Length: 285
Length: 285
DNA sequence: GCAAAAGTGTTCCATGTACACCCATGT
DNA sequence: ACATGGGTGTACATGGAACACTTTTGC
Figure 1 (cartoon, each protein chain N blue to C red):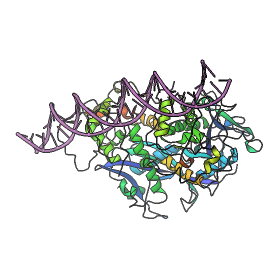
Figure 2 (tube, rainbow over the protein chains, first blue to last red; figure 1 turned 180 degrees about the horizontal axis):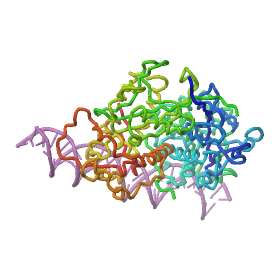
Figure 3 (tube, rainbow over the protein chains, first blue to last red; figure 1 turned 90 degrees about the horizontal axis):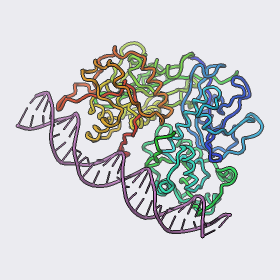
Figure 4 (cartoon, rainbow over the protein chains, first blue to last red; figure 1 turned 60 degrees about the horizontal axis):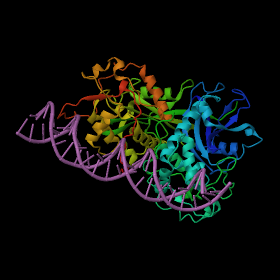
């Protein structure tokens, strides 16, 4: 059978929060075209590899993170014939989020990895290689929207987190202040978040029979979220106890004052669908 | 540069409503594998073609519809290495909707085109070729969700439609009864639908300065919806006056009784974002 | 003591929901 | 006339927004 051959790649928009800032991992290109420009990490899909597996592999290679310490979901395919001057490519873009990144991996291919604030790209101040501006823009919109209906915001946090930490994630990504009182209720009453067993993150290896029980209805899952479910199931089988001691979210050292916060978690640390979405203000000036 | 070559295809899930039933266009396969099974229309992306252009081309070839008489949006990419036994393929799936289909085109490639009720596929009674069951399932979920936040439901109707016609679209696709009174208000107050100039569809070539004005904020557009916007802009330049006289939605002949309905339209026939989503009941038993 | 942050209670208002009711037409 | 469906009015419940207030800790 005769067909036009394509190169198929995956590109990953990996987001995290560092210093209360919404950031994305970008790689400085070492070769032409766009030499020296920033681009999304990514690479060719191998002949025997599923798309999501390729994205996970690239993610692991570029970040050194252990598989399962991120949340990964497909965004869309991009196939403008002019998107890569070298050859005809179609890229399948993914977005991913993680709680903390090790200092950008030194040495090797990914020598020039940077965590870059997202707003610089959104404002157009920083131009990326290829059509990656557009991909990042789409990914950011997708994540903002997913915050409304799922618990993925918790994936920006260590496995057990305080209500305020989680609220700061929403505020940072939506760039909107949220009422602490109402947010408190949202976490308490959503039916999805559960109080974490006390004793710090170390105590999380508790019997799973505790935090489990009533899963929210998955009826309204969309395509992308079905991908999510699979991602989660995969992650399920990966060990998480050997992970680094849950890097903190705010660089220098968060000034801890006030009442000591009780910690919360998503059952089994997996993203869930919210029964009722958490609305954000429409305005974003 | 050396890379594993892929075949890249597009597959289109084209939906319409016929006899108050939610249906999808499927093609009976003439060759192996899956000979005789039903499959989504689709084909190879040409070397110089954008993904969406390829989908539009296939759509036109398979249905004979004029470009611009449908709404087309990307769904996702599917690339399981085992999805096609013949070769390594990645397909970029699209979903599309249209108001009416000419009797499935006789003769030629698409000789064996069928309009099939969607529920047969959802229930698993009807299995499709390749991974097309999964694609259709994802597409249906996506459409159901898009009904909540956009005016795409109107794309299942002729350019000018009555409130009841539009309501029946929602009821058919969501499989839920809606309150006629509240739905009336939704159409009247949404700020997106406009009263159609009287005189039937022929009068639609009215000066666009009338129906235009305040577009709803596009801030919350998601990736897929940005694709939508582009699709709409393309359609904009295509003439629509030579289209067939707007096939009616219900086969035999809708029994017209009661007050003559006033007709409504989306400005310029383009899908819009709703300021407030139209919620559907969560239950769907 | 004072500041800062966690967490709770309460009020007010927008929006959705249910349903009664009127209206216009075809038979 | 009356059945049928279009279209309006209205009362009630719900859920979110705003904000006052209490509690607990660090300085």
